[in-house]
Image 1 (cartoon, rainbow, N blue to C red):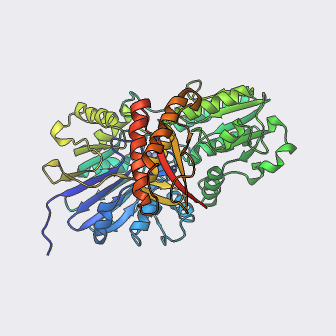
Image 2 (image 1 turned 30 degrees about the vertical axis):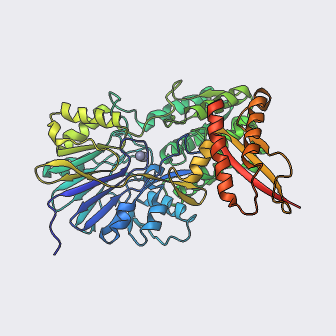
Image 3 (image 1 turned 180 degrees about the vertical axis):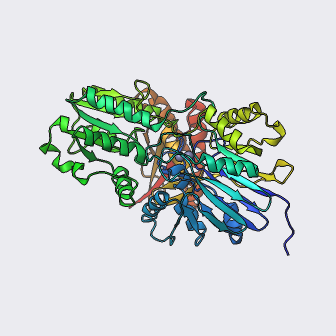
Amino acid sequence: MNKQQNGLKLSFFGGVGEVGKNIMALEYNNEILIIDSGMAFPTDDMPGIDVVIPDVTYLVNNRQKIKGIVITHGHEDHIGALPYVLQDLPGVPVFASKLSVALIENKLKEHRKIKCKPNAVKAGQIVKIGCFQVEFVKVTHSISGAMALAITTPVGVYFHTGDFKLDYTPIDGDPMNLIRLAEIGRKGVLLLTADSTNAERPGFSMSEKKVGVTLDNLFVQNAQKRIIIATFASNVHRIQQILNICEKYNRKIIFTGRSMLNICETAAKIGELKFNKDIIVDVNNIDKYKDEQLCILCTGSQGEENSALSRMANGEFNRIEIGENDYVIFSSSAIPGNEREINNVINLLYSKGASIVYESLAEVHVSGHAYQEELKTLHTILKPKFFVPCHGEYRHLRAHSNIAEELGMNARNIVIPELGDTITINKNVIKKSGTVPSGIKLVDGFEITEAGGVVQRDRVQLASEGVCIVTITISNKTWSLTSKPDIYTRGFVYIKNNEEVMNEARELILNQVISTNFKNQDWASIKNALKKSLQIFFFKKLKRKPMIIPIIIETK
Ligand SMILES: [Zn+2]
Ligand SMILES: [Zn+2]
């Protein structure tokens, strides 16, 4: 028998102290349940990287303990790393709502080696996974099929909200199950972990329905124009509202962008998106319609480089040319870090004569995350004994912790997690009890690389310092120099302004190799010595550290 450990353990591999890559592990005795497997977007110091994924070394090392993965909803910051996690943990069963399963299956198509058939679960369903009884509870969020988890463990009930807001008038007419939440609360909740994204925002978030009203008005005000709407492809409810409005005002709709086409098709197939097929028009038939008969729905609300909207703004979208009769609606908000790219696209669209409306000008977007008053409702209904805020940067977690204290919770019963923390919870105490590896891995095309690896360091150095190539030509008869060494640079210094320094550098190399007999010498050590002296020289003279590449060329 294994020694009993007398508490639940919760480990954070991402999602706390940062935006994105939500993934945590719930552990009791010898059993682990993984909650979500999200990815994050690369930051400016990761050139050429497509996706950032969590380091799951701890989970791989404890492979035999893992009983399953439950997914709260289908946003990338919750499912984006799933193919990579499954690659490391083959055969682990996955549980998710119908739409999440469809989105995961879409994703797995690009990773053919992974054999996984995710299990679709419904709201209200209870699934036993190891010693954990997981009840999926419907919540409202900016994607359909979002679930909270009420997990009955041998220590007590653990409630995880996933991403949520309290929307009393959701588009699918099926609001969050507050009655079930109250029942769970009455029986007693030991631990709550909850979405902290908007914990700094006072009041209530607006209902998704409000966006529909605003969009409807904008359609009326711009009846003569072509309307282009950029939004998140996964916001099925937003897209449903847009489809309804198009139908109402007799506009045809054109879906553009790969993820928009993919997700809309998937959602329509499983009945999450309902519309009359006649209103969809292929982009190739765009010329058959007048501007006022069209609405173009596209990706690119974050200014993403190759998105449909960016290509339109740049004049690179084959069939769609932006002009003065275009009315562009950004039905989205900026994910932190994307502001500059979005700004670029807005400027380009304006320069082509389009009219533009975005969040700060009209209510064309609502957040999918609960504001302070909604969080208070959640805490009040569930009355958890212990609380761990999650899904947010430190300031959001702190704000959420303050809300819990304001509602009467003892500060000792709250733990603000940091990335890599393991928190242990038993019936009477909650405390940080250790750490797990919590670094990141970078996905570069199809390759997974370590953060801070050689390729990354090289790209950063090349981008910020440039490159300096030194060529030394030697004769393979005399094994000595045939001419003076040459130096070529790119992105390093303006040669014209620094001719003197470059001449000195050439002299330096010449002096270093002039008496070398290349026949009996190890070329690698010659190159290393050249590299070193040039590094010291350039730093002394110019305070710069270019990448230095010495090349030795043999001639007859
Ligand atoms: Zn979400
Ligand atoms: Zn999220």
